[in-house]
Length: 258
Image (cartoon, rainbow, N blue to C red; front, side):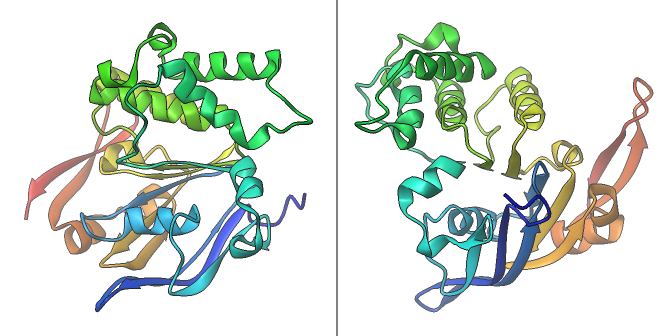
């Protein structure tokens, strides 16, 4: 393991369907342990970029590297042992119980020589606890609310024990308490995280932000360096300025229509 090598990177990454080009020449290098936020207006390519980085879709051009190796050359099992993804709209069988759904996250690590063990039980229990879903473990999937399902999907990803975690708007459908709790949990994990977010104030807590606009990477850097009033006006179509929270001195964004 090379500590100086980006854990996940892409070069000249492009993707199109039919006559629509959804991503144009994206170049990114994500360092080990970093939390990289991906932001942009609806239709800017956030979900598409995450799907390409997760090997869910195949790029039209360019390549993705995981630990310096081309993703296209790695076995799916090997990828799943290092990388977990939580999509916006993920499906799970209706009849499955929550405990069983989260246990699916251990699949990449199981084999005839490494069957299910008490260690796997502990990992699944910890993942449920991390998303405040232990009390749901015997519930069936169909009985869950949208927010509960989202938390279980995140628990399943955590149960994989990945080196890289990709999350596509993970706070969708969650109440404010669980939004804050999930983000705090994810950012405390000793792993690399890429997270697509709509809420720009939540995005301020990331180490760096990648700003997408119409499928192009238009800014990359520390949150306060890239989310400038000019960038917010140009890319997001809003007027904005920073306020200081008197409680803890944190900077927060206040928005107005252009």
